[in-house]
Image (cartoon, rainbow, N blue to C red; front, top):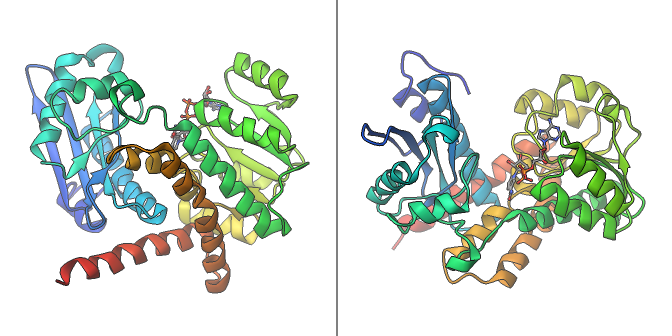
Length: 360
Ligand code: NAD
């Protein structure tokens, strides 16, 4: 996303079609936050709060606008009745995050009357959600003990797993991942659960994480092979599963990668959506779009909003299989990259439902 210095706020809102952006300041607690509501056609704008020590306000604004728009697309394709929103709190969580700041932030969320619902994101945890919940009911991702849905990672991992099966079906004509050589990068909450599904199915696993202890633990538990970061993109693999950071599908890795499928949990996997989305297509690599694949978490949170039912959330997560196949179909029939096919699908649903809502 480009920063338009002449029109840094309204110019960018217009460009990406944001409905509302709220700037929050409180001198007493040191709170500086931005809440972005991108689109509420499908429902209230849900998206996590990220706390980060941004180097300047434009960087924070850019992040919240980009992320909130992403949430609109994610929820639309996931077939849930949520719009897209996101919030950022500017500052070092280790230094300034405390009860008063979070409660003040909760009051700002409350003032939006339910148009924005928050959740966890970077530097925010379920305890923080409990504190925000003291000032507003518009919070999700609260612990199970408090009636919430708890950790969304198992759902996210399950969604990645079914999307990988859909990708295998598209590429190899069968859902089976047995014997497939899979590199999983990032063995955290999602990566760990994913590795368990893949191991049960008999995949041959290559694992990498910057946390060496975690690699050792999972290599021994699942009889996998530890991947060397210096050579892991040269490995002769079938599937690459990025489950750590974004932007790992880039000029450097695409030069090396020999896989046929990219399917993982990380957000914003394509360093440059347009350029690398087209390159993967040209190279014959099937890219399962990240926000479709990793929507199990938001699907789970969605069911938390109305009498949480784990089975319903799991059934809905399973639909990621069909959605992924549908996207591959559109990509093939329109000869467009898969990321674009996903975007079109998201936009189509929003337009269709917007039409329904104005008719009485
Ligand atoms: P996590 O923090 O539990 O795990 C991330 C793991 O990646 C950690 O083990 C960390 O050591 C490792 N890591 C960090 N930098 C790395 C690097 N350069 N190379 C290799 N490993 C590295 O996070 P998570 O909840 O498992 O999420 C993983 C990814 O999926 C993130 O990008 C997240 O945004 C995305 N995601 C998560 C969810 C969810 O439900 N948790 C939902 C949607 C998307």
